[in-house]
Image 1 (cartoon, rainbow, N blue to C red):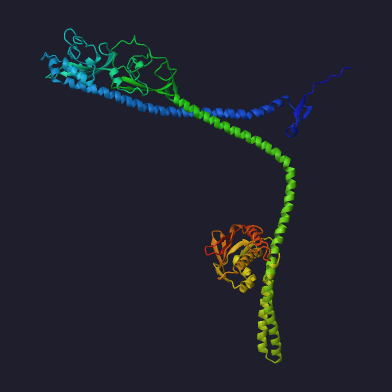
Image 2 (tube, rainbow, N blue to C red):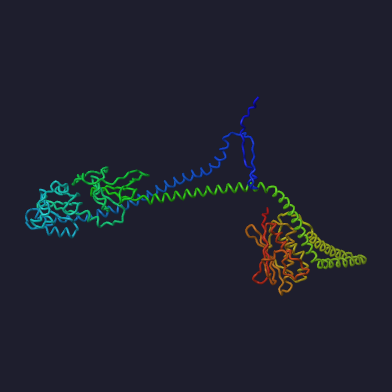
Length: 619
């Protein structure tokens, strides 16, 4: 009998102990999940980087498209301005020769020769006008279209244009019809490319008797242009580049170009070379020529064309788009890098978050134990603070014990005298006088009661309750407790701003302890002063109450250190305290959400300022 074993899927994994100890712990267990789950974890790891990569590519593509579109729009506006400047310059040159031909048509000598009334040789006159204006040639045509005078005439041996018939030329027919004749063509006598301007010559009685023509070399006009401008070309009706600021482009023909054919071209175009190869496309509404096979034009250019009816040519300007593409690519690269940095930041943050989560799990138990110890120590510190506060009050009571005994002895002695006198007066039957003695006796009892009540309230243990109290009442009680020392040391007390109740959030007894402590320090500081005065000043500022206590003593040497524990300006080893009073007072005021500050005044004394939050009282 043979046992058949089915292959069991086995999964292996490394424990996370490897991360802590560096020793891999391999576990082998049967797989209870699908096989494709092996691919889930790598896919999840790859989805994040792939997502950021796709997002970066999308952002880069969008930024590139937007930047390229804005750049092309700006380049289009620049091309419009540059082309307008080029057209204005070219038309300005043309206008000069149009005015020349108008002037020559009205010249009397030229009119006399055209009418046959004069046999004078006017070739020198025409040559003078040609040289003065920069024209290539000036000649006169009779009514039959035959040239009868020319600036290039040098006699029978060199007749130049004289005797030629130009009757078939469009510009001659336009002039003979009474208009301004205009045309362009190729000529071998002067320059290959020429512009022709013709104007009719009228006889004395009005009919057209001939026409005068001015020819201009296109190369001479182009010589005046700046070569540093963008390439500009003027195409005629046959698609021939007849005028341009790039000589290498001249007389190249673009068979695909179609223009309004106002007149036929006056020269053969079959023998002219075709224009360079290019591929015309549209990009964001702009005409772009790409893959331009020319040494004088960029590989890719924005082409802007405008038809000029006045000269019957189409002007085209070629703006290099490479800077726009480079700038758009740079913006796209920067945006892609920014997305990459964001992705890197997210990835690093995720790694840190995972590490932090593991560290928090490892430290959770230790934190719980530490929190328990902190709670215990905090409770101990609170009890210690309460003991220090109580000790401070007992210390103040100890300092006042001698004065208190003296203060109590006086009313007690008076009470004894009033009692004995009252007894004697009763025995003598003087009851009215005895009643007065008993009234005085009651007053002394009330006086003793007030002293004892103040001391009892100051010495009792106050709960840590913060409530609404009148700061004026706390000052009254502190002055009552310190009254004996104040009178014994001859200290005068002034109070300002105590006209109405000022309610603050504090603890009654603890605030009184702070005031008694500050008063005690002020009394000690006034021991050697000629003027012994303590001034209380109470003000409201916004939602805070400010109570300042100033003395006329010598001031404090280091006011910024008075709230440090065990700091004291008194002699070491004296019975005047350990330097904890102001430190405890600072902590008490801080527990009320207030502040206690110390500084020296301009007059030389010290000033303590207590700031506490006000409490709105309901009338």
